[in-house]
Image (cartoon, rainbow, N blue to C red; front, side, top):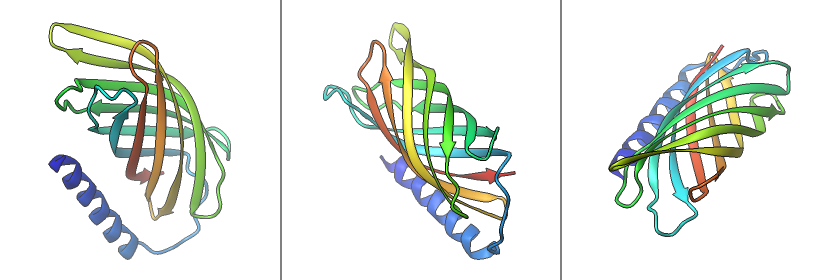
Length: 167
């Protein structure tokens, strides 16, 4: 939990500095972006513990409203919840209102869970919604929530914060 607070504090600090130093200017729709991401993994099974995730999201715009994303997240081990890797590809539908961009996405991916003595890889379908803000110069940030349907494991809810570069 201390790591989550530390990561969140760093992201908020970087975001504050970015917003203060960068001039507000009209920037066309992003062609490519990369976001580091921190989140809280909340399993729907009460036998597992809530834990933190860190990851990276990259996207490429195909049209003004459609973006393809590739996302990797590392789930940090916490008591009853084993460490894990989430990898998914998704299509995000975005609706730009100047510097506020709400979105929804659906994708496919895999959840790799490392338990002592065994490794499990399960199919998953992530659904997410959120809002991105920016870009200011080349920086953007976003808030969202993801619901993951996992084939042979408990589903999860993953609220997240991301801050990154938009080109």
